[in-house]
Length: 187
Image (cartoon, rainbow, N blue to C red; front, side, top):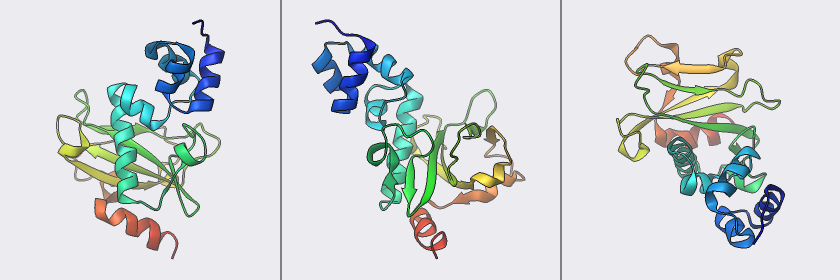
């Protein structure tokens, strides 16, 4: 069966999943994955199943956020696959979920902001893995950053060992996330 990039993209827009695309078009997953990734169309589920380790961990952070804040609307599945500006909407407040493990080279967590995007999220919720495995199930810390506090910064880094870092002030207990978005934001 012959396949091309246009056919693969069209099939993904119809089926919404990588396995369905491969079944329908005959394209091998490794080719379809790359074409869909470059087109910005992969869903969190596809990233969990087929993505790089970093994409899988980022998708796990999104799952954990959804577990902690169940009323959040998943923008990637309910608005647009791979929504470019934010991952969740909670009563009109937008959230971009970030993941980081401690980087060996700097001993810091870090992530990139949406500084170049036309629509920036209201908040970033960062899940920072605390265990060397990088898996959230082995431990993590959560931070809630309003977009405005970054002042145009494109990369945010923080060390878990620097008690004087102003970024550490934005830590929240995981079980308080729901309350924060339900009660504090919309009070």
